[in-house]
Image (cartoon, one colour):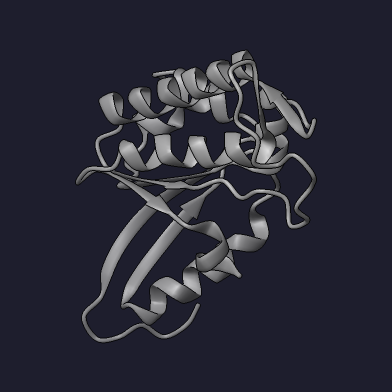
Length: 168
């Protein structure tokens, strides 16, 4: 573990993801050490985001974490929106509803700070990505709207992190 600055702070973090996040631990520890923060990071079972957040007796709520970091991948978005270029408005609405419920459950029950990673669109833009019609929208538009939803939830307890900027 890197040597910390003289004024040491501690943070107990639960990193909730739907992907294998083990490689992120060392990176987060290094970033935190540069700021004089000693972190302890735990990761729950693989791809158990909804279970961990909606189950009020999960480690998230029963252990002494002061920061919960939630990062959802392209796979999570595809599970709800589908991976098609065009997304039905109903699929977007269901995804937004699930996301709102995840956020509200966290905000209502987790005592510490919540850092939620925003969503990234595909690295390769596709045709129809920005369409927005009554019955469907482009995948890029749906992801932009989910990010607007995330940002609308921010307060002194709930923060949104731009994952691309933070990690890449």
